[in-house]
Image 1: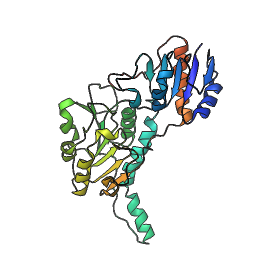
Image 2: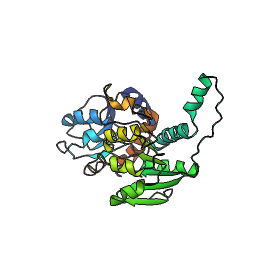
Image 3: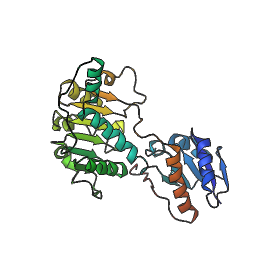
Image 4: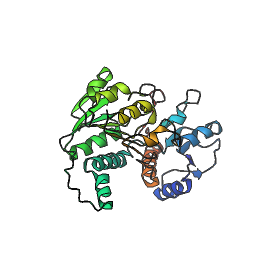
Amino acid sequence: MPKLLILSKHAEKYRQLVDSARLPGLREITFDPAPDVDVVFGEPHLIRDALPLLPGLKWAQSTWAGVEPLLDPALRRDYILTNARGVFGGLMSEYVFGYLLLHERKMLQRLEAQRDRRWDATLTGRLNGKTIGLLGVGSIGAELARAAKFFGLTVRGFTRDSEGCEWVDRYFHGPELLDFARGLDYLVSVLPNTSETRKIIGAEVLAALPSSAIFINVGRGSALDEPALIQALDTGALAGAVLDVFEQEPLPASSPLWEAKNLIVTFHTSAPSFPEDIARLFCENYRRYAIGLLPNKIVSFIKGY
C-alpha cells in the first residue's frame, strides 16, 4: 500500500484534493520525507532536495511541466518521473492569443486614445489569414495549433521528428529552421530546456522573420538569445515580442529587456499551476499506478521531457 509524500507550497490544498478523491489503497499522506515513502507529488526542486531521504521512492509526480531540477546526471534516476504536461495547453493558448489579439486589435492604442479623449478609428489588423510558427509541438503546441485553427491561421510546426498534430499544416525539422521562420507573422516558442534548444532563437532566426512579425516565448528562457532579440526590436527588424520566461528569473532590475522597444514582459505567469488541475492529473496517474500500470506523462531523464 503506497505512502504518499506531498512537497509543495500548496501541500495542504493538495492533501485535501487527494483525500477527497478517495484513492484506492493509499496508506498514508505525509509532508515529511521518510524511508518508507514510495510516491512523491510536488515541485521538482523540493523533490530534488528530498531524494537522499527517500530510498524507497518508486514514482515522483511533478506539479510542473518542466522538471529541470531533477535532470542533473549526478542525481539518482532509479524511479519513474512524470510531469504535468497536458495540463497547461489551454492556459497557454489563452495567453498567446490574448497577446496576439492585443497587438492586432490595437488595444493599447485604443486605451491611449480614450485617455486622450481622441477618436481613433484607424483600421485594426486581424489574425485570420496569418501564419503562425510553433517551435515545439508537444501537448502545449498542439493546443496552440488547435486554437490557431479557430482563428483561421495557417500553422507551421518545428519539431525534432514528430508529426502527430492534425492542426499543423506543415512540419519542419533540423536544418529547416530558417525556412520554417521565413514569412511567419507570429513565432511562438514552447520549447523545453535541453542542450539542443539552448539559444536556438538567435540572430539568424530573428532575421529570417519579416519585420512585421511578433515573437512570443512561453517555453524556456534558455531557448532565446536575449541580446539578439533586443537588437532586432531596437532596430525595427521585429515588430514586437512578448516574453514570459527568461534566462534568469526573476528578471534582474538591471536587465535591458525592461526597456527594450515594443517588448511586453510578464513574469512566468502564462500558465499557473492551479492545484485542482494538477491534483486531477496526479489522481488519474495514481489509479494507474495502483493497479500496476505505468503512469502517463513519463519523463525521459535523457531527453529531458
